[in-house]
Image (cartoon, rainbow, N blue to C red; front, side):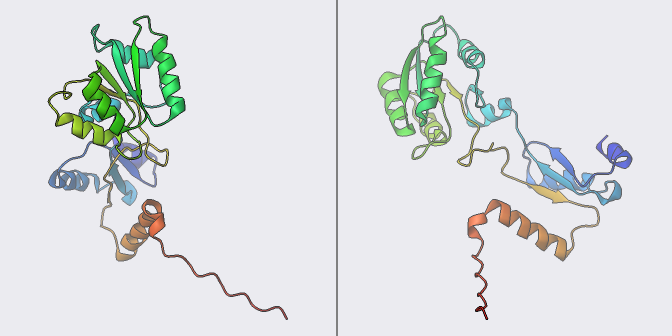
Length: 221
């Protein structure tokens, strides 16, 4: 269908949204996409939905900020009637205040325990063993990812359900994929390849670019 659409309406590229696969499968899929009309390049990446993200992280659900009260409370309600103590983990004081207010709106009268970093959250998990955790992923020091790894290796707290409440990287943009594959019928020339490498390196690792020398000023006459 994509090839038919491209034959009717030429485009600069075809972006394929597909989950990560093995290298062999990926190569096979990209070879299938290579003979596109007008030599259109195909770019394969993965923009996962919340369900997939939750599965990969081992959490109950994955909520993307900003989160409405209805969404937050319905996610907690889905955990069952035995959830009373909720550990709220976020390094942003405003987020802690906002989520605490949202939980206060629930008729279930949740008891909220707050932690501003992952290390403190792990302590509270072991000391208080809450019924559920609302976890921000991007935090300095012990991140939410670190907390999930350590929690998974501790049998005492392993089964405490977690709801992730963040989809942001340190720069405030969604983390959606770790791989990017480009293919085009007839292959890429050396010039194409070098241009792609240069463009991607400037986007993905701007700090690594060598500083350019400032042009020397010509003395005024």
